[in-house]
Length: 241
Image (cartoon, rainbow, N blue to C red; front, side, top):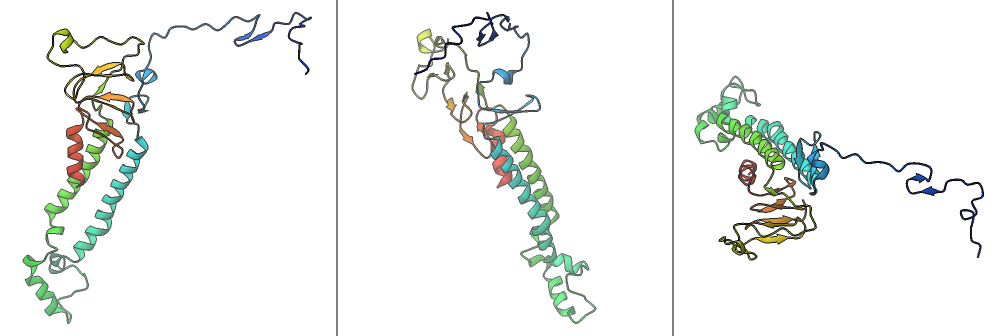
């Protein structure tokens, strides 16, 4: 076995390398930062956009897929389905639309029958102006509520970055309060966030944070559903359905 002893036999007095450079160089100095962005010290798995001004959940790619599917469905409805229904609307023929019918041709009798059955056609409500305006309103509401629900803080409980376990909250039973420690109706300690989370709160493994009044983590919205965006999520479900 051959052992390289060139570093030990340093006859030229050449400074030896270290992890910071060479022995004749000063180690780097660190200057404390006076200001920093919250996203630089964020402990969750969230995705930040617009230089930290917009925060999305951990499933942001699926949120983009939801937008694409929603826009595609709206485009198919207004670009394909609705024009097809208008063509089969008796009002369309009775108002003089071409639709393949002409009162001056041999199809006068058939056109008259359609004109006489304006109020009994099952297609009339689909092309009513109220239906069209309602469809436009629900489509815009679905897009707005989706983005509002995805970009709203669901009720994240700030974690404590410290190796020391914090004391029980002031309103817990050990401190003379009414809320117990542990159990479904009491404070529960989260080892990841190092906090005593209140009742009805839970740690989301996808976003890696505790959420107040946690309902579930929706991958299609890309965010947790909690105390602050639960109502908007309900509006999104109504508008989509």
